[in-house]
Length: 229
Image (cartoon, rainbow, N blue to C red; front, side, top):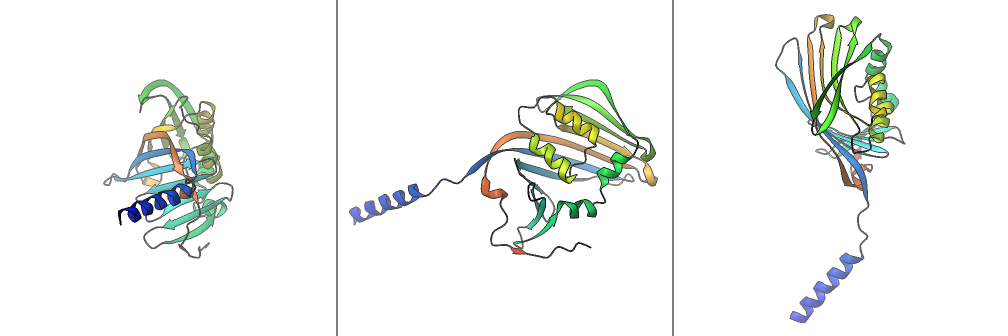
């Protein structure tokens, strides 16, 4: 019996050793906290995590769906892990549904001022910029990091292709030139009689190794039709 047990363990180990190791990819993880208030009401907050690799981005937050952006396919998978189903929309669908908020803002007359102020956020040196949109009575203060030790090209590509991240073009150019990211921002607006206040802070930007399978199309999930209306 002992010999049989030893033989069984050897056989299990041999079979396990013959299995190919899961494929891994290098990427970036970004975690942020956002707080917003409208008309002075109680603040609402949410956490959001970005997991990025060269051609895909996952966004996970405290909403029903996890979002998988496939940059080469130009598709977004809205994955509901609770009900094990998903919907698919194109980047064009998303831009149309979001009414191209960033394109609208970029078409407004706005200016970006470099204040010369510096501060350290999460061990990164950041410079302060102020975005002013007079017609919307909008002011956003952003702190952009300098020369981060992670390659942010996938994040920049994601921002350009989807407009999911609220970054005006001039700030995106600054970010790309110095390989930086907005680590903190504060937005205030009194437009349309609505006093809006939004504060966002990134508390983690790091290189990380992921299982490549986490960026794959959901397997064993039911595809639901996406309503394009």
